[in-house]
Length: 371
Ligand SMILES: Cc1cc2nc3c(=O)[nH]c(=O)nc-3n(C[C@H](O)[C@H](O)[C@H](O)COP(=O)(O)OP(=O)(O)OC[C@H]3O[C@@H](n4cnc5c(N)ncnc54)[C@H](O)[C@@H]3O)c2cc1C
Image (cartoon, rainbow, N blue to C red; front, side, top):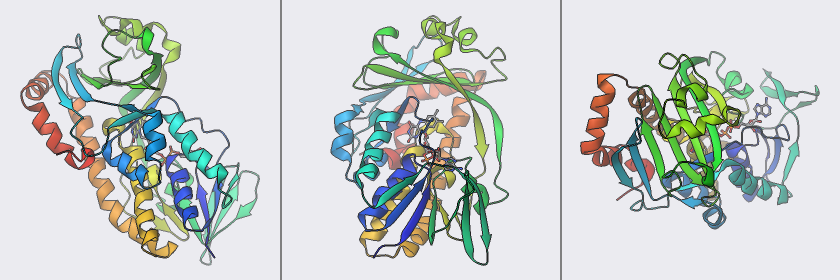
């Protein structure tokens, strides 16, 4: 007879954890609003992410829907002149990209088909812990509890604050615009099956194809100090190549990047954090969802060895805290490099031009699992 487990959040880490626990006979209740509004645009699925997703048995379905990316083209932001090109063909697992919505749907369908998984479409309003019992108070004032509660409600969720009452996030100087364009409507060059990284002065642009090359996902990150006129139209209006992308500003969605302190405690009462709730990281390495799937893979490995749910969660926290912290640090370092301006940005671009392939392959070796 399996345990009863509540999972808060129905995005990548929540659904992934539900599929894994249900595989070992545990009864899952997922609490989350019915519609996930955060499924805009694409996700890069780096080789470590693909391996973690394979632990859920999803490799064939993902390969059939994803785009295989062949290289990272690093370019200067001025006119998109090439600095270097890093092949993604030597990685030991494929480097893919996919529409967020499509990956989410694959996970959701698996959950909906599983009789051990049920959904409560609501939000957790607050969490209390008294006399050793952790209780969840839902939006409709219903109170529920279970011996194990998984906090998969993201970097700004209730569980992160319940486990670490002093957990804080502050606004950074950086903002992000995201959009998806049909590939027929983008300037030449963006529709290659490559990641494009254009490095500018306190700004960078990332693009890659999704939906079998029919769409191109764009993310533009910039410093609000350097671009005080921060509409996408004004930023792209002087750019010889990107001008056309800024013409429909309503297509771009803006988010401010928050800086979250790393947590060194992922458990309180019945609650264990996973995914962004445990290790939010800046998006510069495209690893956030990947690290969430690695939490799930770690739980799967533990359960497959016969560990109890309690031990599986304890051991997941033990091994994943330092691993995810190291990736968070790498993400922060990448962000600092992307953010350079003036002479430092010129020097950065020169170094990338001369030695970028070697430096980047070594820096990302454990994520890209390259030869
Ligand atoms: C611009 C950008 C680009 C990115 N690109 C990549 C990429 O290419 N590759 C990659 O691996 N990662 C990428 N990431 C990171 C990735 O999006 C996140 O790491 C990932 O979404 C985390 O998944 P999660 O399930 O832990 O949390 P979330 O996706 O944040 O989901 C949290 C869930 O909790 C639910 N929830 C919240 N509060 C409550 C509540 N009170 N009660 C019930 N439910 C609640 C929400 O509805 C949601 O379903 C990117 C992030 C950004 C910002």
